[in-house]
Structure formats: C-alpha cells, structure tokens
Amino acid sequence: MTRLLVRDFVIRKSYLSPAAQAAVIEALRPVLKAAPPFTPETPLGKPMSVRMTSAGALGWIADKTGYRYAAQHPKGIDWPAIPDPVLAIWHDLTGLARTPDCCLINYYGEGARMGLHQDKDEADFSYPVVSVSLGDDGLFRIGNPTRGGRTESLWLNSGDVVVMGGPARLSYHGVDRIRFKSSRLLPRGGRLNLTLRVVE
Ligand code: SIN
Ligand code: MN
Image (tube, rainbow, N blue to C red; front, side, top):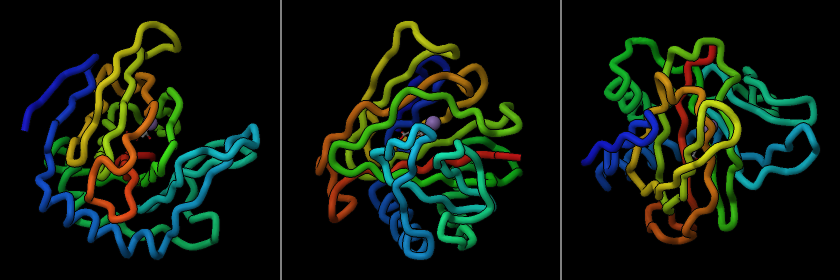
C-alpha cells in the first residue's frame, strides 16, 4: 500500500485489498439495482460515454439543462443510501466526522472515457473529494487548477483510492481510457469509479 503525491493529488495504491474490493462490489449490487446507471446527456445534447448513478442524499446528473445535484434519480426514485464499506473509506482517509452527501458511481465500459474537468458543483471546496477505482485499469490524467498547461498521467488500478483535497481540490482531471477486461473483479469487465462528495 504505497502513497503517492502527484500535483497534490494523494494516490493510495492498493488501499483496498482484493477481499475489500469484493465487499464493496457486493454492497453496491443493491444500489445499482435500485438506481440503475443511465447515460447522461451533456447540455450540448451529446451522450456521455460513462454510465452514471448515485447513492446518498443527492446525486449528480447531467442533461440538456446542465449539470447539477438532484434529490432523485431521473426515473423519479430516491437515491439509495451510501453503503457502509464505502463510508468507511471516506472516514478513514479524510478523518472527517461529516458524511458525504453524494457517492457518484461512474461505470466505464469498453471505450468509455471522461474529459478533463473540475469538480465544482459543490458549495464548499474545503471538503476533499475521495475517488475509489474498482475493476479495469484507468488512465487518469491530472492537470492544473486552471485550464490548459502540462498534464501528467498515471494508471489507476482496482483498489486504488485518490484524495483530491487542498490545492488539488479544483484541479482538472479526467480518464483518457481504460484497459477493458484487465481486471476480473467485474464479471462483465469495465471500470467502476466512486466519488464521494460533500455537496451542501
Ligand atoms: C470523476 O472525475 O468523476 C471520475 C474520475 C475517475 O473515474 O477516476
Ligand atoms: Mn471529477
């Protein structure tokens, strides 16, 4: 379990053991059943390549009217609670008593990616964002607090956890590609990324 610091992003390699990863997947199963992942559309009307859902009081959604946090899944159902094994990661790594309002769940199938962006729809940037990688390897790109400039890339593997806090909280980041079927954690392949956020 090594700890890397890349441009103030804290990367905890192999933070979750294989058994812990399997436990998180097991805990996510009913969440994904209750709030099925959907394909968000950007305000420009283009479908995103990741499929997305959330757990917690608020979920992050994207559609023609923009990006925002919403109290319900687009199908009009409440988001399921954030599973305990996921909350445990947040409390352990942040040391905060405050629980996150949102666990955004992104599923990357073959060919899915996420362009460079900032996480800035939250009210208080003094809280970190904690990001958990599960399943296939993902090539994570780290930029700067402002658009443009040099970037740095590293592979995130299943069980790695990234903490984006402090000076890194508003840094640009994205996922260029995944290595489809590089992991056997998810029977059908793909990568699940969980991001835990305090929204309000
Ligand atoms: C995100 O920025 O919301 C996802 C990052 C990742 O998939 O590693
Ligand atoms: Mn993000």
